[in-house]
Length: 232
Ligand SMILES: C[S@@+](CC[C@H](N)C(=O)[O-])C[C@H]1O[C@@H](n2cnc3c(N)ncnc32)[C@H](O)[C@@H]1O
Image 1 (cartoon, rainbow, N blue to C red):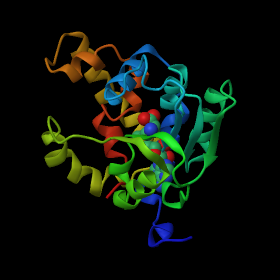
Image 2 (cartoon, rainbow, N blue to C red; image 1 turned 30 degrees about the vertical axis):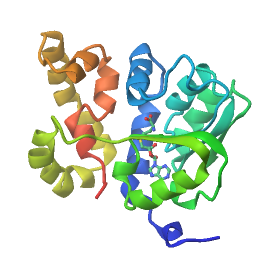
Image 3 (cartoon, rainbow, N blue to C red; image 1 turned 90 degrees about the vertical axis):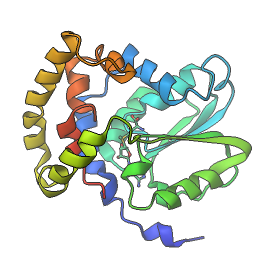
């Protein structure tokens, strides 16, 4: 069965650029587990994943599936469209034989009524057609199951939206990733020093104060990395 969403381009999801980043940052760490618990705070880590079948949409390196399986999820499927990300996900999840890692776009997903929990962390706000993605996710969940998405909030992002976003659109999203990677060294260094000097009182700053330099450099906490993305 095909739908108009089948032909939606995956380019605006920036898989190439995420793949570049995930290839340099893919080790698990305690601060990422803490992030996962925050992103999925509607699901109790002690009991909520136990014996559940899961679908991870836009799995990246597979870290979120890893924690869900560690908390007792029984089996499932993790999909992404970037080969580098997928190879890290396969390695990370190889000790869970019930977990399949597959190259597939969320737009191509045609599974119906199969998973207890369908989740997607930090993905659908990048997509050209987030509604189609969400529709396919809702289709894949069992009746009575859960669909969980985490997307960027507007709060505390005003500076980014009003100042950096225009720069992103016209400059950074057009620069090659190796250039962005080296440019990002400067704001990451500044952020790293400021955080260690106690800058920032909101909860988010308290969380990222514990991030390693590499984590800060690679993830959207770094305005240059965020600016490198192609999305709409
Ligand atoms: C910000 S990363 C999030 C990765 C992962 N969810 C995490 O939190 O670590 C976004 C991911 O979405 C993937 N992606 C982009 N477009 C996609 C699509 N159409 N279908 C599935 N995954 C997609 C990218 O390749 C990338 O790995």
